[in-house]
Amino acid sequence: MTGRRSFPEESAVGVGGFVREDTPTAEVDRREAVMASLTGTVRELIDATIRTTVDDDEVHRIRDGLAALVARLRTAQLPGPAGIRYNAELRSWNWGNAVMGAANAIAPPLRVQHDSSVCHADVVLGAAYEGPPGLVHGGVSAMLLDHIMGEAASAMRRTAFTGTLTMRYRRGTPLGPLHLEASIVREEGRKIFVAGSISDAGGATVEADGVFIQPVGTPAGGGR
Ligand SMILES: CCCCCCCCCCCCCCCC(=O)SCCNC(=O)CCNC(=O)[C@H](O)C(C)(C)COP(=O)(O)OP(=O)(O)OC[C@H]1O[C@@H](n2cnc3c(N)ncnc32)[C@H](O)[C@@H]1OP(=O)(O)O
Image (cartoon, rainbow, N blue to C red; front, side, top):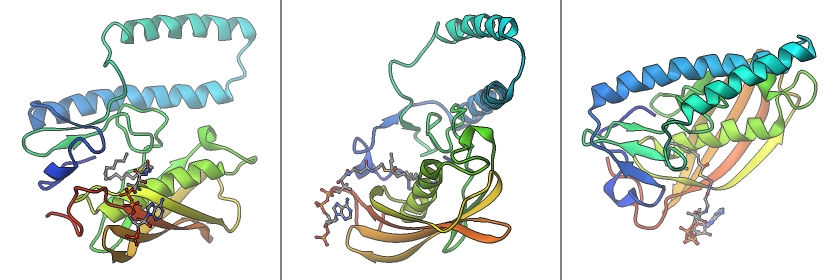
């Protein structure tokens, strides 16, 4: 996540596992780029593993080589998941996030753009996201919509957790290039109602409605 000056609001710290660190922004940016380069290669590894047809002996050799690399990464590890970290400049980073984490090869990743009233993202989903043959797994669609709708609800200025997410799968979502959108429909106190969709070149394949809730202790309406 890129930093915005008022996020996370102080009252949200501790609610969602935010961790304050003194790492300067330039160092965060540098390390994020380094990790993203590793993650991109691991993402390639996932796709290559799914689609490989090399023989059994080669699979075993590759497994042993990868096990040695895993052992090297394990020589210095965080004690648990990455959480959401932020520094004094409120530059925040959550490199383990399942949808957009810079160090998470499972994340497509989704890069969400914030326009005035709409969040949108373009993404290409490959073999790792397949459910029905050639189509995106329904849970992956829900995960991506949960994230972009959550970003729309938070507007990167307040914390909002998913309360209820309702999906309508109108037709199969093909693997390949997809467009996602999300926007706030209305707000009632701590509840933020959001609509979202996934589209291919032929229009919407999935539509969703969600209720996102600001946890107690965070300012209703946000704190910019
Ligand atoms: C990990 C993310 C960190 C976020 C950092 C921000 C980062 C920004 C950008 C990133 C974007 C990420 C987007 C991912 C978003 C997730 O994936 S979040 C993970 C999935 N969601 C969760 O784990 C949430 C688990 N649930 C909870 O923590 C609590 O149940 C909630 C949702 C905070 C609500 O608890 P509460 O504040 O005690 O609620 P409560 O006082 O009982 O009710 C308040 C109102 O909400 C209503 N309500 C309560 N629960 C629900 C519900 N489930 N459905 C509908 N309405 C409800 C009540 O009826 C009540 O309405 P009114 O009576 O006021 O009209």
